Length: 84
Image (cartoon, rainbow, N blue to C red):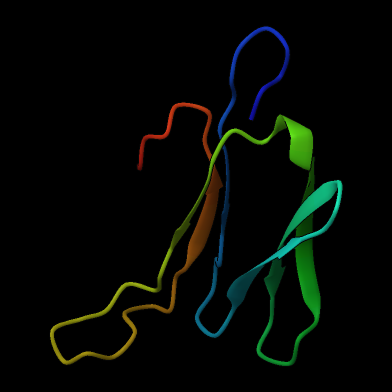
């Protein structure tokens, strides 16, 4: 994300099992929200689309059996293009 004096990285992570991260893009706003299984919003981050340099989404991590390991998914706004 371009903050005027450089770039800054923001990360939104699904913090508990069963939660998910959804990204919604609009004309001028990019919204990243952490949602519960029932669809209730836990927290939301909004960014001006003109300031976003890159948006990186990571799928939920999988264990050896192919099932979701902890169900963690994250979306990351990164000005450098690097993946953490």
